Image (cartoon, rainbow, N blue to C red; front, side):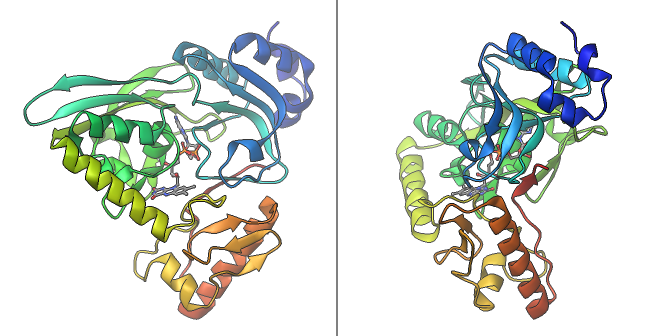
Length: 329
Ligand SMILES: Cc1cc2nc3c(=O)[nH]c(=O)nc-3n(C[C@H](O)[C@H](O)[C@H](O)COP(=O)(O)OP(=O)(O)OC[C@H]3O[C@@H](n4cnc5c(N)ncnc54)[C@H](O)[C@@H]3O)c2cc1C
């Protein structure tokens, strides 16, 4: 059966949503988990988000590559997710196919070893924390800044994840990128345009068919394993003291503005620490975290976000921009 059956008819999103032929073909192309009308609240750390028309977890890089190429050729929109720890999905959900990388893009290995540096390759679906642990166990320094950041290696690369101690851009030397025409390219760091919590991959992209990070290579330095382990433990402890890590959140909600105090400090100054709207609440522990406290809807979180933005703007003339990726209809 071929996509031309449903390609011809009306709006794409509606076709992905209701077309039985499309659904059957997706099911045939993916041997990993396939679900339709899948609540995205089950796949995001914020625990909100309506249904994705289709949710798939391809079992291997080849399966994922073939699927992406097919969806792009058929003009069916897709969204890539790793751990869902930086996503706010709207209540109406996602029109198109959500592709989860966490099942099929697995593996961490040492690519080259030397007295000055060692290169470690990690597949995009690996948990970032597993990569950090791997580095510590091998006595390799460079990734401890990321200890405690949830989500996948691919998500960390796309978000240029980081802390005061560093960011992905400082250690990533190369990434394998899948383009929607099925091309797999090794892109080295000189071609990767990193910015604060952002990465732009080379080339113009159609947001309905974005490129996919398949793996990344990280350049690390030999160091004492015990020292690294002690540092990692201290960083985790400090994180749990400062951040509401037990609550449903997407981490820091807003980017820190360039020419002003950190977002959390601004929010605290206007007295919005602990502010509630519906089931959403600004954390009492860290004002740049918006939490899903009591079965919040995405709408509660979005309205609280706007309220915070308006109040910060009124007080300081500073525009807070979300670091969290807001996706969906
Ligand atoms: C408690 C908590 C603490 C946090 N602390 C930090 C912190 O200290 N520093 C920090 O930077 N962030 C932090 N975050 C935010 C989040 O963990 C990071 O942004 C993380 O790197 C996102 O990874 P993910 O796999 O969950 O990405 P997702 O949320 O699944 O996706 C994020 C974006 O990346 C894209 N994406 C994901 N995988 C791929 C891929 N393979 N190819 C192409 N695109 C892809 C998605 O389409 C989306 O646009 C925190 C979040 C929480 C919940």
